[in-house]
Amino acid sequence: MFRAKIYITLKKGVLDPAGQAVRAGLHSLGYTGVAEVRMAKSVEVMVEANSAEGAEVLVREICERVLANPVMEEYSFVLETIV
Image 1: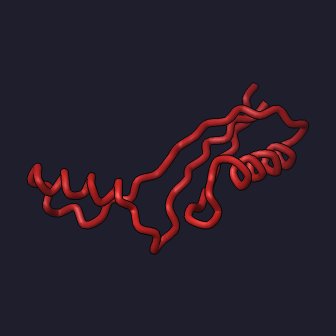
Image 2: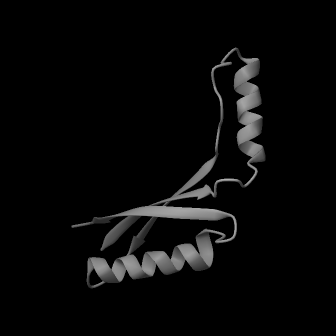
């Protein structure tokens, strides 16, 4: 059993309206030193596989087909073995 901690972000150059709204809110609260905010998604998935390599293949497929929009987003993940 493996746990994948997946982190999905917008690609550089893609407009992030949610990040801009948070930045504006922070500025209105006096945090004027905040230059940029980028929002992201974090997902944890438990997968069953015979090996770490098999789990990585499965998690990549899940990310590319379901969780991330490859046109606008990029992803990374960390795989942990669960005992």
